Length: 465
Image 1 (tube, helix red, strand yellow):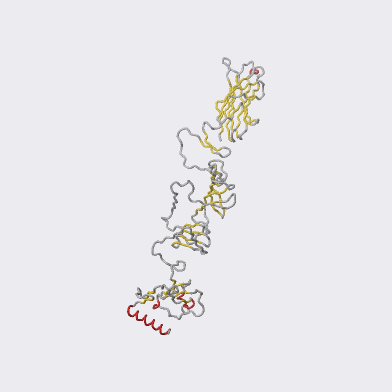
Image 2 (cartoon, rainbow, N blue to C red):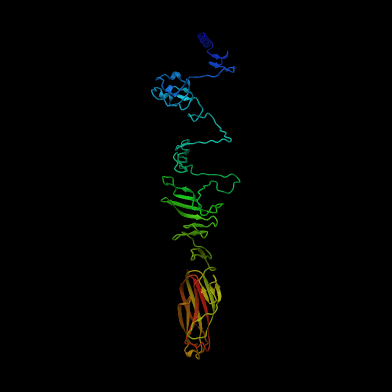
């Protein structure tokens, strides 16, 4: 009975194919070469089952079994275990990597699939992937694990690096431009109304409280390991604070594997240090012959000059702040051959307030030119044994004599009024800050105890260097 039924079905199919060139199953009006309509019978198993074979079975087919006449043939691969034993058609199964439907191209069996992870493919138009709350992640252990256009973007998953313009990045982020006239500048814009903060930030999350760096490197031909010849960034100077108050701005260069600091800016004071990490002034330079000004032009009008004090601070010297003082007064000598300090002087000027009473105290270490002049009065022949007397001028530093001069005070002219004879004492002294100059007068061969000698004096002190 079954044989007769099968024969009848074959006869029907052949007749339908001959008459209409179309075959319908469960339909009297086939719309294609083979049209299978779904059944309304809930117990009917709809579907089409092509040959189900393994990768091993296809590889074991005799050579030439599948050729150009079989282009488009469809099978379902049930397993992908690597073929073994006699496999004359092994080359035709080289693209079978997953179970599922495959078709024959004339050369190989390839998957019928839109899964881009199983086979290469091409987009036929623009595509949009809407993730919503879903994540998209790529996991790789390859050097060039993900790339765009070869070297446009390359992710080195094996070493955790990203390259632009290179498929072999040497650092965490490596940019290479091979076009000398373009791609040389990068511009990152903040949106309108953005806060005044850096747009691109480098952050070192090390737990170290001090000494760690967040640096950006620059090099023309650095080490093959990807290091940089020059670096710029921040260096932590204190405990973990806020707003960067514990981070100095840092510039250094790499030599022999270590960093040498070249410049630092303190975020609190704004002081800039070159050759020092602890700048005490707005610009603090620590070096041998640290400043050179080349090509300076002469100035017109009244100007000052630059000087450097004992701590290395550059200052402007002019008529108002140069170390210079002048005082006048009188000295009264009551004893012969005895040094007498000058009386309190009346200051004509004292730019740095270094003259007090009858002494001068140096404000800073340097060379000082000191002039001390005493105008000794001529006395009558009845005094000083009738032959005049000697007048002396002494300059002392911290109580020790430094310069001592004398002059002969002659008798006045017979027919003229008595006059004065000047005893001048001029010297250059090296003084340290805080040292004190004092000034003394002395007469010899006179009788000041009977008639005091009153002499006017002038003191001039000027710092040279």
